[in-house]
Amino acid sequence: MKTGDRDIPILIVDDYKTMLRVVRKLLAAIGFENVEEAGDGPSALALLRRKPFRLVISDWNMAPMTGLELLQEVRADRALCELPFIIMTADNSAEHEILVKQQGAATYIAKPFNAGTLQQAIETTLGGCHPESTCADGPSCEVA
Image 1: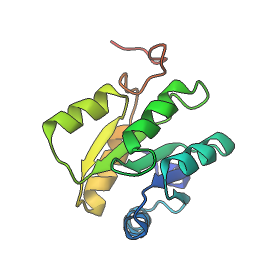
Image 2: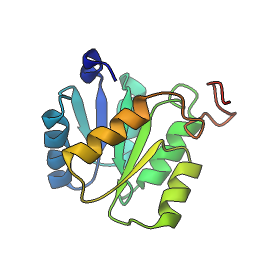
Image 3: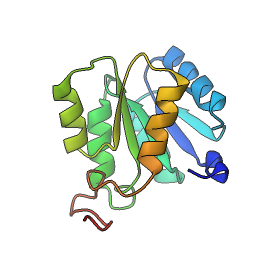
Image 4: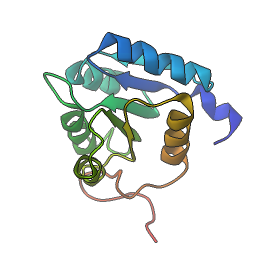
């Protein structure tokens, strides 16, 4: 990721205000300042449809819409379907990681995490084509 890429607009989604603050601070610590927040899935979806974002970092366990449901909505929306998406969760099970990737998340982060883990996840996510992060009708990137 190039230095200039640090100004990309990022949306963080969590229904726990403290976690929003923590993730915002971690992002700032690694140079990302262009960050907006949403407190639930429906609010996030509305923001995503109004403004261009280059990355979503969402909690899994939220109400009334889970992060997985938000991810499914994003992947089903032709205007948003290629948006890079990271899911964060306190449940660090292999089953959850597989499910999240099958649904189109580029990366899965287990809580708690630090700035280095978040930076690595962002670099991995934004580093290229992720065939799992595709629109409902298939990937738009070349898959070897």
